[in-house]
Every structure is written in C-alpha cells, then in structure tokens.
Length: 199
Image (cartoon, rainbow, N blue to C red; front, side, top):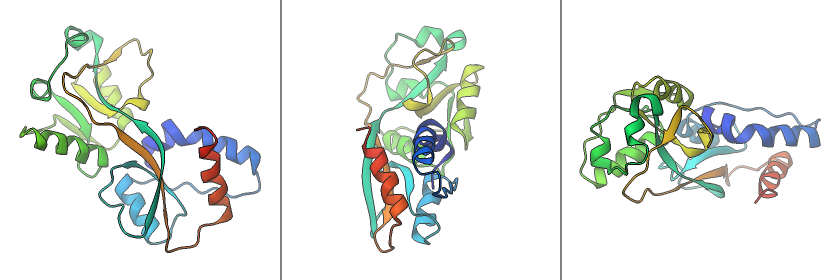
C-alpha cells in the first residue's frame, strides 16, 4: 500500500528491479493516502505500507523501518514569483502568498498545519488537492506557492524553484510499515531487504 506520490517518485524503480529478480512473485500495489494505507495494514489487506513519518495513525502493533529522510519544501514559478528566489522567508511572511497544498486527509497537510500551529500562525490554503503532481502544475502556472516533498521536484526544473526558508524546517522520513500481529510473507521480506540494499 502506498500513496500516489510515494508510488511514482520512490517505489517504481524498486518494484521494477524486484519484478526482474523474482518474475514469478505476484505484486499487488494498492493506492491510498498514507492514512488509508494504515487502514489497509490493520485489516490485513496488504503486507506492507510505505508512508511518510511521523504518521499519527502508526501506533500499536505496527513495525516501522526507516527507508530515507526527506525535506518538504515550498516551490514557486520563476515567471510569477522570481523575486522570491534568493530571498529567505519566514513562515509568517510566506502566508502572505497563496498556498497550494494537499488536502486535510494527508499526513503532509497535517505536518504543515502543526508547524504553523507551533508558531501560532493561521494557515488558510488557497487550494487543497489530493495530488502533488497537480500542485506542481498549478505552481508552474503561477496560481500560488506549493508545499511538496522535495523528492517530487527535479533539481534542474527550469520553471520552478525551491523557496529558501529563514527558519529551520524539520525533516521527515519515508518508512515501510508492517503489522507484527500478522504473519509477513517471504516475498514481502525479500522486498524489504531489496530496499535496504541501496542504503
């Protein structure tokens, strides 16, 4: 189980390699939000989930293994917001601009709302969507400043840039989770091991 973003920007090469090494193992990918993935794990519909962490739903009975660290970032169009490219911004200053972000059902949205609450800032997004790809598209046409995981944006994108924040931005993790109350398949164990080979 994995979200659109994690499937597209992280899992595909691992699934490709695993399928080549073990062509007779049937792989089923179930697409859900990170919160929905925890539900799939709890009811035994999937062996593994890939999710952003911290994840408030990953609690008792879940084993979590760290895969990689990543940073979230704000991105904007050079054409429409080019004056901000080399100007460090605080969270308070950033909220003067239209913010594009994932909807409230996502862990990414929960994460950003928590950061703003800690600073006693009222975050009212201009646009809330269920797809990081759409957020990137809307940032590209100048509708606002999008909040996305950094691994979704290539470093050499000619149209978009990552804003520089004047405050320390906490990092998050990508993790694989499984239910330790249910037996895990040998195939799932092999897949976890294949992820660790790249560390």
